[in-house]
Amino acid sequence: MRLTPIALVAAREIREALRSRWFLICAGAFCTLSLGLALLGLAGSQRAGLAGYDRTTASLLALALLFVPLLGLALGSASLAGELEDGALGLLLAQPLTRLEVYAGKYAGLFGAIAAAVLLGFGATGLIVGLSAGSDHVGAFLALVGVVLLLAAASLAMGVALSAALRSRAKAAGAAFAAWLVLVYLSDLGSIGLVLARELSPEQLFGVAMANPVQQARVLGMLALTDRLELLGTVGAFGIDHFGVSGLAALLGSTLVFGALTTLTAGYVGFRRTPVP
Image (tube, rainbow, N blue to C red; front, side, top):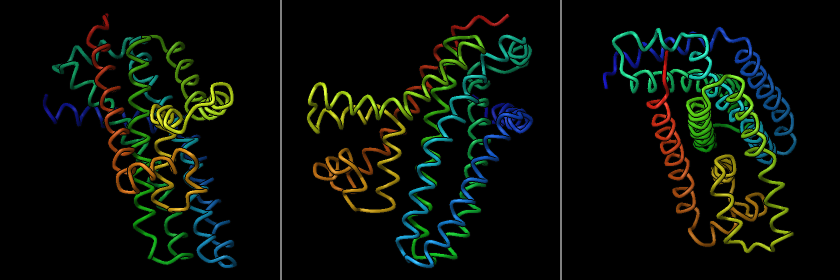
């Protein structure tokens, strides 16, 4: 695997993403809403001090948990299936490139585009949060950015894997949207339903949450911001009781990374078996 071809494919993907009207709208909405939350938080912090900072960063985390998986799944689902349908993928593979270089370059380029949107939104809000809360919380804010980037990597890997498996733009887009609904909304409702119907123990509920990268990122992000158990929820409180703060953070971070790598590998296995005309 050569780095130069991967970089060229990645640069191509970044240019294509920046030409996508859908990506620009979603990224612009994320940046605008992040900035709006920061401005509201600035007013709150002037009255409530540190509480205003807590509310601002917690709101940013909630916003990122909504937008970032959507961006990752949508961009990833169109990466291979779309070009397979219009013939562009065949032309790309006709070049002196291996499938692994094409696959890695596409993933790297799309991740770079999502990371740019995340850093732009958090960069603008970081300046405002820094003005309102001072530099004492820079470490926590940077940790929050890292958590969101890990979530972007995991959701993008899922989108690319769906694209490689389904090989149809429409099917991959539909599956990506369904996966987003499950990860962001239905998982919470399903967990509540399972607790009520099956009377799940805290250990079982923790295991269910560990299968969802959005839930992992939520707890990990809240750990970076606060140690208040009532804000961490049942999953966070159970994890701290059994692993401690550092142990739970390490477990969640490693699970996010392992999940992204595993999903990305599965997607590549599917891509290798995909017939390209």
